[in-house]
Length: 241
Image (tube, rainbow, N blue to C red; front, side, top):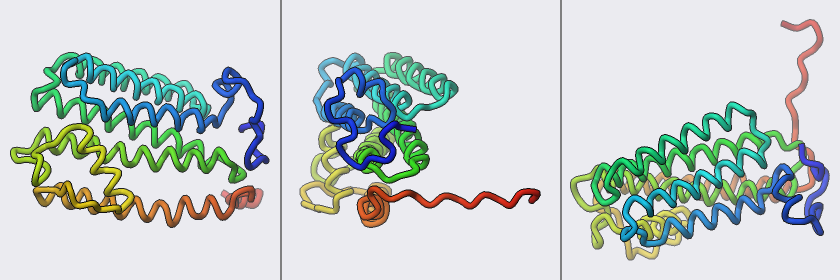
């Protein structure tokens, strides 16, 4: 466990960047890496073709590798991560990034990498004995990743669909889908982009519900109990089967 498990905030003040990188539960740095991944995902890299999609895979893969490290994952998790990133890389460079197949593979690869990130963070967060600042940062990372995961789902639906994803802009760009995802998860609802078909509408509805439920339950509980020890399952009495 982290050496600042009993601290709420400020336990790592004055630490060097190298020490922060080596320490477990460095979810502030992971949050910055997720934001970088998010920014790169919004860039129009179509002119770079396969290279642009490969760049997205590499950045997400690097973010996943750091998440595994800072979450003190087991060696088999690193092996699974390497296989996932390697497969995503091979598939990304094997298909034309502008074709439907290439777009579907790119979206599916991004979704799998984001899901692996979510599983890694949630597994580690569940092991925290005390709700700390790292626990809050981990929860924020999860929230951003949920939005990024849904954006990948929208990209996959757009790639395999026969009609446009949105009413006004067809399938839209990667930026459009990420923008729509975060507008939906925060339930802002500007209305400038709306889903054209029933599948997209139902997916968007689940995102809006999940985003609000996550904020009013998980995040609210963590913030209200910061600094408090978590309840642990009682140990079974000795001699019980």
